[in-house]
Image 1 (cartoon, rainbow, N blue to C red):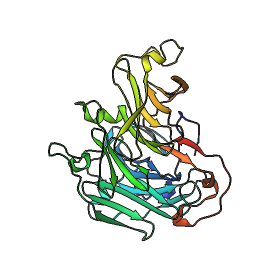
Image 2: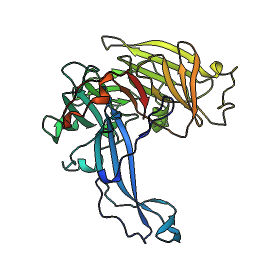
Image 3: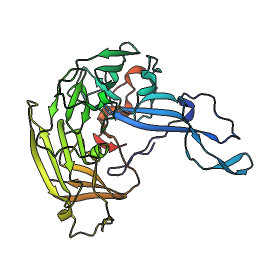
Image 4: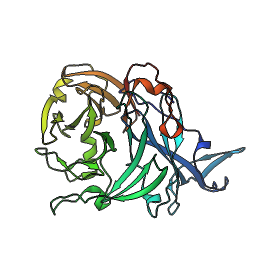
Length: 361
């Protein structure tokens, strides 16, 4: 585990012995085992949901060096059903809590990248370890969920979204969501950045009215738009994908009926007179939104070329930058009690004083 200050990305290493794997391929064949993991989401209490896939890749042997082989990965083996392991992870103690395998019809194969984790504590978020944990993924009007109360996965039917006939929610058309699920107001939320945000399992929509129409390059929407929680409020940010790269941020009002523009910054003008390592921008390079700072509503993290940068919109200045090849990340708040806590599925311990902080995974 490596925890660093944003805009750098923290990283996690999971021991291979903790991962469910099937029989490996013949070491002398042109097929290799490939363990691929990702952080899917973070709870408001700082727990991370990690998914690891046991894949098979075509990897022709280029040379043999004793017991070791030099290979070149050329793609994934079609038709291989990967074993999938899911963990709840405490980033400060390093504790991994394995979730049971999913064995609910076809859901075993289709779930993972857009699962969210939700916690509930009797004392309220930030005051102590959670009493209950839920992990869920939404697809159309069905939700696969794991509840710590039962220790099992089940499928719940939710009320279908009431959208105009010309519109369809991304999950209903088989398309992926534009960003990770996130927890807000004791609910899990999934964002369709071309339309709005839907809480689960209760129905309802928050329209992103007044924003530019969905571009033809729909899969790219998530690069330039982001919904998240910062300073306890639901916020939305977008950046123009063309010069002069206008970055805007909005806050949802307390009634949940409308969005208020908080900041608007012209990035090209902001860094025009400075000595920044990402300038001049290579052709077709555009700033992309990486994350909203969960503890500072003025700060947004961007990807510009090979650099990750933090922009304070209230001060209209770049506050930090770092050369990094990473792409996406999950913002995570680490509350004071987390360092001495154990995940709810494994029991709770006492609180230890620590300054609240946030990181990107």
